[in-house]
Amino acid sequence: MNVKLVDKSLAIERVLESGYHIMVALAPPGSGKSTFLSMLAEYLALYSKVPRETRLRYFGKYDLYTKRRGFFDEHFAKYPVIHLDFSAHEPRTIEDASMCLQTS
Image 1 (tube, rainbow, N blue to C red):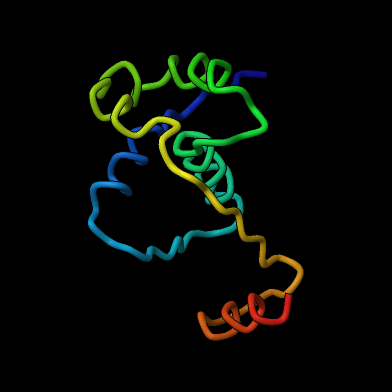
Image 2 (image 1 turned 30 degrees about the vertical axis):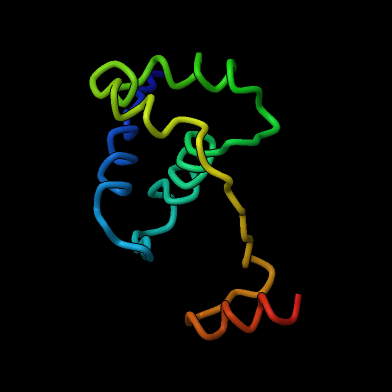
């Protein structure tokens, strides 16, 4: 079995440099939305279950680190990250998601 890794780490820079405060990820199931958001959270997180040094070794293999080192260092492990999981509620709108937060 041949497996090819697609390096989407530079998309982190595009997201952070976009200037948007809210973004909606629209893509078909299986396209990597959750994987990308997990990668983004681990990149930004000041606190994580995974030690900073381990995350640095992991990201050190990817384009964001090798090609955009200044940007990488500026943002890596510098922000508090809050993970909200709405999967149990399946909200269809922003208002539905807001209600999930108020009732949880």
